Image: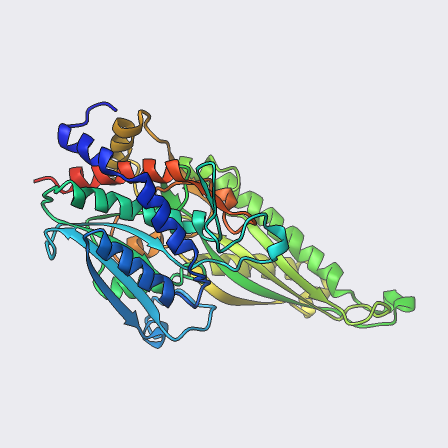
Length: 421
């Protein structure tokens, strides 16, 4: 560890691996599938209080956020949006930095696919297994460990450091919007999503859509008397693939271009026909369309509709029987922070001093709560957290506890430096 002051070295040493394991086990054992986050937020608040933070919990009426003009969409049924904040330092100061994370998780799926209890928090050789351990309770605990280390080391901050936990990220981000509307914004923020300890400065967005393609039914023995909606969907799918390639070739941001496929278009569900001996007269496909960092969801929607309209116009059947496009589910804006901004550089230099290597600045092809803090909260935000993101939502989801500790050490020193007089 280079360039660290004695006070910073003391804070790094104060990060407690055993407490990290205990806190993460407690959170993973809360089955906080999206829409049911009250229990895990009660546990998070308890853990924050035990760490010496001043804790505030608000339970926001979902209908209040549904009525908001920036409502990002919400798929899970719910009665409340519980938001928890734990603070230290000069509470109420105009100077504030936020470490944030979501506490909702996706379903564990088929338990037979797991070799460890998805809700057990089992630890094997320094790795903790369980749904949400990676995405992203491990990152939440890294933030908690960082602020606990500051409290235990009696560091005097010239400002307020805040750990913010929110619900409803997995189905759109209503929880983060609720937090922002409650006043939780800052000079800078770090969301501890799993990034393998790389600094994400640009996040793509996404919209979800439903495509309905008409055909004409006929007996399979006389197939040519009908028009297969499946075959006409293939026309539209080819147009979407060509559009995806065009968008990739046009990308100017190095962070996004390096991904190879920054704005993927995916068809996830296809349903057509009701009898094997009948030409299908209707096909419904559900998919995801990327939102570029230079676009709003509205601009991306207009482009998607234009791609489908032009493909229909070029086909003899679809010209007179066009497919329809509906936008469904969550709407994820894109977001970016300049690679020259003080946030990624201060965090990167801190990581270099604590861990010995300057992390790369990268982009990711998915949306996150960062776009709400940036676009609706006016808070420059990056993603930086422990774990390999490819393991999210998968069976035997897991995280290395030492990587959680490394993240906590970096965050603790970053907060000290960000809030130094």
